[in-house]
Length: 409
Image 1: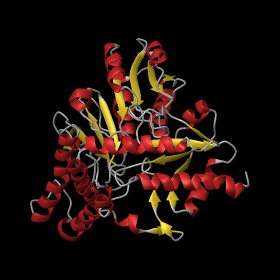
Image 2: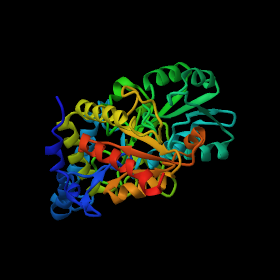
Image 3: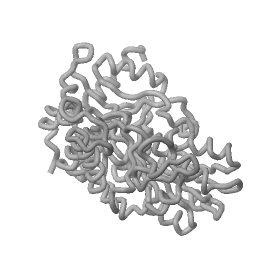
């Protein structure tokens, strides 16, 4: 079976836009996805009909708002095959989720001389918080490199995984190259080493099935806005054994049990980590995004992107003046392709494509250590999702063929 992309595209109002008189071709899904009508409507419906603060009121609006908010938590538990919903914490984004772990777990359980093992694939969100913690506490950061195929060098990773490594922080999928990391091996090896594993799932969760029971990591973070949901909503899933021992990340209302001048005690999970009034409307609307993806099926989402990636890589072979990065293996690569013209800067390539109504991302993709390892300052990146088509890939390739003409090469 294949996705009915024509039907899907009708659900996304923004895809009817024109840019420079041409149909919008949106290929920056690794940065954020577009939103279906059902999500847009859910935000509006909340403010029109059920706007109230949650967990506090006994009146109808508050109970409705609370039910909408908590329904999303329950849906996420099912979507992720998580063992229960009380260990699902809502944050602002994946970045805040990772920072929560760094502050509330890392500060308490990591000590001078301990080591954190990262990879060269990490987004700054899964690098900078650990760098800050390492500077503060005298912890050593180690980085596992990629091999010649732009896959994780497992031999070096295993060599770096010493008894001093107390935390392995790793992305499930590279936002810059699309490389899918072998989490099963990483987590198995890390746990055998008595290391805790924090997974940045921001790129993987929108694009493939996630089974947290099977994955067995300790922390898992992602954002709503990359998977059809609103901005301003992040998720942290963590094992109860960690959350129960961690101190709260933020203090204030809702995260307490009792407050006296002498002593404050914390609320039960998940409230312990959700201080203050949360982003109720967007969490409620995220439910519609989860339903949309669940109705399609994440196996279908992954299958569609594999087909697009295979087709795109084949078309890129026509471009002799471009270098393509990443594994170039659809089993090991998500729907993101990074590339560079051999003589034209990525930003200029992106500008030329914009003239054709094609939106891609250019720059270091918040992955400067990766760019340094590649030996380039930046790349251009096209990233796909459920509403993209082979015809849009064709338009991308045609646009890239214009680069030589524009520059007289």
